[in-house]
Image (cartoon, rainbow, N blue to C red; front, side, top):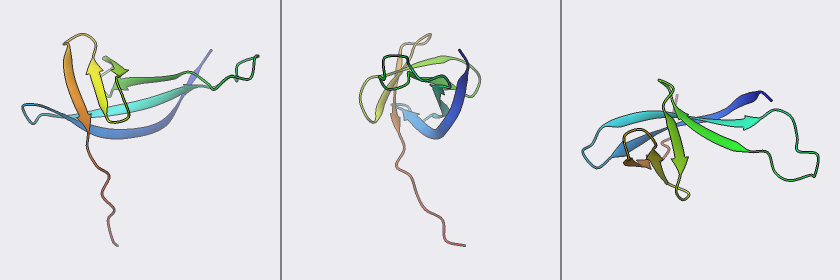
Amino acid sequence: MAAVLVGQFHARDAEGRIYSVHEFQESTPAADGTAPVTTYKLAIGDRVNKVDDNEFLLVQAGITITREPQTSTVS
């Protein structure tokens, strides 16, 4: 199955470092009608696990990161 990029956001760790996180969903719907599987990765490819709505865990480093609030820009 292929995964499709459906979103991206920035997250920050406790020391203030900012990470670019990409959100993917499986492109093929599940046969049983369940929601598609969502996975997260850093832009550099490291795996990320979702802890809750705004908190994530960098799998390899064991670092917790928090989603940055989205800001709108006025053109």
